[in-house]
Length: 430
Ligand code: SF4
Image (cartoon, rainbow, N blue to C red; front, side, top):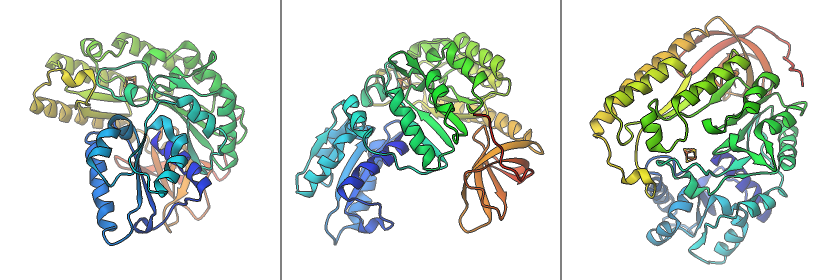
């Protein structure tokens, strides 16, 4: 989402004549667009400012703006602690970017724009064309969260759930496709909670599936409790919807899920997976896991391992629990760090074995790959298959923006290498 936001911020500031520079040491303005989900996010901001200060030691100080969720969560503290920062702008106040920059140009310091004005933000951004021109583009359709998982800062930094108008989204999709996008990933902190005047994510998918030159649709990140029947069924009917779902579970233990306030059980979760498999038998899953959550026992951890082995996620993102200031979980009694570390190692070993096995099975098989870009000056093109696996092929043909059938001939943990077996571009039914 931050990548999408950064592009939209750039669309905005172009209006007041700011342009990207290839030489950061000559910049007049730095925008650090931050993410608070990552550990030590605030420290990274101070670290980056240290680097800017060093580069500009003998030059005119650039305008420094901190945007994103760190700005939202810790804006006042940042402004007080670091004099070098001119402004903080929260994720729901991006429409005030230009006003803020113009004030900072005039020497106004310590500008704090961290109001939750999400409706006003999208109202204004809808009038500014999305100029992104990537083969695979992002589109934010929903922001915020009402779920309040006890470990998570999002409800405090992005505010309540808000869905954008379906008409505006279809418009923005068309604009991205006319700029060259062949794949669009619909984004939201709770993307499947999308609800604009009764229109759900499945309705939006149906609408954008009609856009002729759009070949692939993805969405992320989903919450199990919003996985409604209509969304499950659309995986059967929309050929453009890719057969990979990122469905965070966090833990395999119902006790821990309850302590996290996740609002679903493992039975509910597995039911969704089972139904999806009925409608789309080639569907695969990826997920997020928190290891060592407060109160996690060996038995709870074992249940997480069992879940991993049962679902056989083709990709998983696992982290040791780390408290986020201001969240309820931050005041819970942590488990022994060395135990959490050991569990993470065990978990990741099993997750990697499953992933490796899955990837070995791809060898000598054919995949449909959407090619995104040429790699440097080599005759190699980078693309992704339907399951987001990175694929590289050698060719003299310009493959950018094309979908080709590729035979996978080798690979490692991160990349698959293939040969094109079909010269004609594959066309999907609209
Ligand atoms: S549903 Fe997702 S975004 Fe919302 S609180 Fe839970 S983890 Fe955070």
